[in-house]
Image (tube, rainbow, N blue to C red; front, side, top):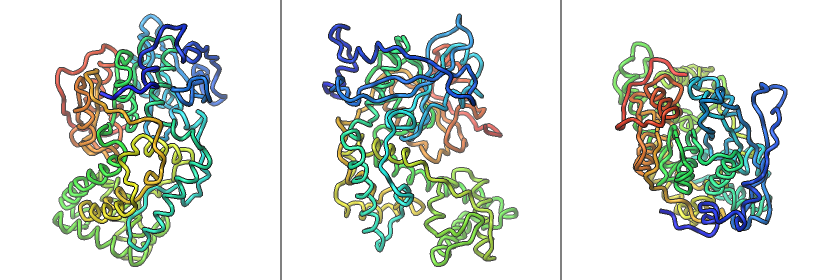
Length: 479
């Protein structure tokens, strides 16, 4: 269990109201209004105040933007269902509208759907570091000749954020966002909250459960991170999970040589791919999306978690490399807004400062080692990041380990939070059940038509978890 700091004690165990230093926040009144002209009138928005530092509740305040869609049946209403889409750095105000489209009616009858932008993100006192477009890109491969530039990049990002945001950075943490969630709970007049979190949102949910176990009702954690490896290990686990996905793809593609002509055996398919990468390293491959270097191609490692899409993509790259003309590559992903990148580093670096070496040479050694272990993405994951130069957050990270009930949903072939990450969350949450979608591809489970949908709906509406962990096949088509 996490050792309680004074700030934790304030939030986790309230003294009598007259002595409660955060009562000004938990007793505030929200003024609900229509969100905007493009949003249905049923969606309402409001803003609440929280302390920047829960250890100093009389000090600087932050705004937290929240919205809601009320339960459709007052008589059947159970409470509130909070959402977080992940990140860290992703805004969450759109979640109720996004989820409302495919949530079962029996869930919408029972819960007010609550979205919020976490502190520092979106409309909630957003961070800004003044980063240039080149400084926004976190995907940087290791090369001996460019490593010194990457060290300068990492230091520059950390220095710019400190100069622009100062002490505020120390308090943009998962633990404080969990405290903000508890303020939302109190302001909404609820004794407990239920929760749906995806990706990083599963870690946020697990931290809330650790800090406020008695206020955690029904928690669904979709595509889970491993709390024991949160921080630097989150990136490294992506690299580790990519290699088996790449091997699986090569087997799948070899069985369909008549269609793709990338190789008759898995080894031949893999050689075809690496030949394309080597050629692109010598001279970028011209594609519809512009020239792609070998590093650009490796950075698209998430493609290999969807076998058919990856086969189509590599076939297009092969044609482009051979013909010198455009093929059919995967879309060039747009970088997130500056606020999301700033918030990503604030949480990733501030939460887990102890997991990030301070010596740049350690990153060099790790990148070389992991490029050999995990050729597609190992060096991207282990090379230097701004966290090497980031000031630690205001408190130590949470050690997650409890008996609180929760339901974990996990695809077997998840590109962002690999199966091993979900299994790590399951070990930490000893009261949880885990549903694994065998053959399931992509990041996100609920709403894709697998058996996980029914189990999650039953849990949210009745509180009944499966009697044991389940594994079920992937549906024929996804959402």
